[in-house]
Length: 470
RNA sequence: CGGGGAGUGGCGCAGUGGUAGCGCACCUGCUUUGGGGGCAGGCGGUCGGGGGUUCGAAUCCCCCCUCCCCGACCA
Image (cartoon, rainbow, N blue to C red; front, side, top):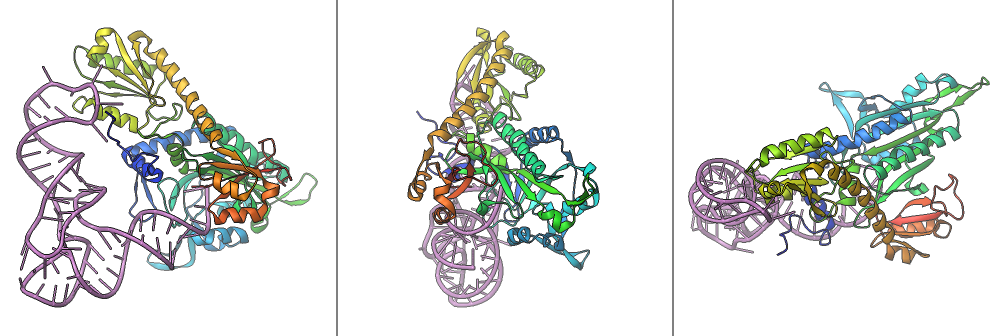
C-alpha cells in the first residue's frame, strides 16, 4: 500500500508543495505584517550553516565584517539617480520618531550602498588605503507586493559586501573572485546546487551597477533562482559620494567599487533544488543534523546502545542527534526526520541489536543496509560523502536534461515550460528579450560561447540562458 | 493598482433563517510502539468588523477590513 502523502505531491502543485514543506519541516511562519517572516529554529539552523559557510569564504577573500545602521537618511538614497529609481517603489520610510515628525525621513535600508559610500568617502584618502574590503550581515527591507517565504519577503537577512579599489580592473577581478570563490564554491560544494556563473543583461542589472554578475540555479521544477550576485559599481557611487584618493602619482582619483550579496533566499533555493515528495533533502555538508540515531524500542539494552552510538558518531565529528522519544510512534518519528531532510538515519531496535547490527538509511536515495555495530562510524562517513556527491550529480543531470538549445524566441518560450533554453544572445538581442518578458520568460544570464564567463562588454558569440524565474 | 477567490477552534474544511459541526492537531488514560498505530474520554470557536432586516442571522441586505491566487516590481 502506498503511503498517504504527507505533502502535496510536487507534480500536483509545486508552489503548494513548497509551502507544505516550509510549514511541516518547521522552517518558518508568516509574520504578522504582510510579507514578513518568522524563521523557526530549524530554519534558522539551516541559515546559520549557510552563514558559516559564506562567512568563512568571505574572510578568506580578505573582507572584514562591519555593521552599518538600519536607517539611512532619505537624501542619501537620492544621490545616485539610477539607484533611487530602482529602489523607490519598494522603500519603507520612517517619518516619525520620538513622537514627532522627523526633519528628514529615514529609509529602512533596501541595501547599504549609499550609507556605506558616505563613510568610504571619509575612510579612503590614499591609494594605500585600498583595496578597502568590508562585509556586513544584516536585515534589509524591500516592500514586496508578492511575498513568498524565504524566496521573496519584505524583510530578509543577507550579507552584503562593499569594496573600493584603485582601478576598474581591480574591482572587476574582485567582483568575479567573490562570484567564484565565495558563491559558486559554496553553492556547489556545500549546498550541492550547481550554478551557472554569468552576466546579467542591462534589463536585469542591479540599479546603480555598471555590470552585474550572477550565480543562477535551476530548481527541481525547472524554474530559475538567482542564488547570489556580485556587482561592479564602477565610479557611480564614488562620484555621488565623493570617494576620492590620491594615486601613487599624486592625482585625485574616484574609487572603483563592488558590492555583492546572498540572502535567506538560499534557504528557499535549497528546499526547491533538492526537496522531494517526502520533504526536505539536505546535503550532508550543510545539514544542521547530519545523522539521527532512532531508538526504535527501548528494550534489551537498545537504549544504552543507541546512546553509545550517538556519542561515537559525535566524537567522529558528525552533527548527530539521538531520537529516544519512544512514546511517539516509530512511523511518526521516521516521517518527521524525512520531512526535515536529515541525510542519514541510524535505526536501532531489539531485532537489530540481537543480530549485532543497526539499520542505516540514506535520505537522498532511500538506500538501506544493515551495518555491524563496529562498522557504524565508517559506514556513516561513507554514506555522508556519497550522499553529498550524489545530490550534486543528480541536480546537474536534472539541469542538463531540462536545458534545451534553441534558435528562436518561440522555441525558447516552449522550452522554458520545463526548464532553461540556451540561444545566441546576438540573435536574441534586447528586442527578443522584451518578447520573452511578455511571455514571463527572462534572460537569466549571458555566458561566453564555451559556457564560461563572458567578457564584460560582451561578444557577438555570447549565449543567453533564459527561463522562468522565482 | 488590474483580474479572480476566500474569511467558521491551532491547521484544513462542512454548514443557504431555528441558536455551530467534522478531520487533523492538542490534553488524559489504556494498549505487545519496526513506516504518520489502536481504543476510550476530553479541552478549545463573541462564525473578520460594524450596521440593518427578522420572533430568531454563520446563513439575507449595506458599509468597512483582512488574507490568498494570477499580473506588473524584485536578493
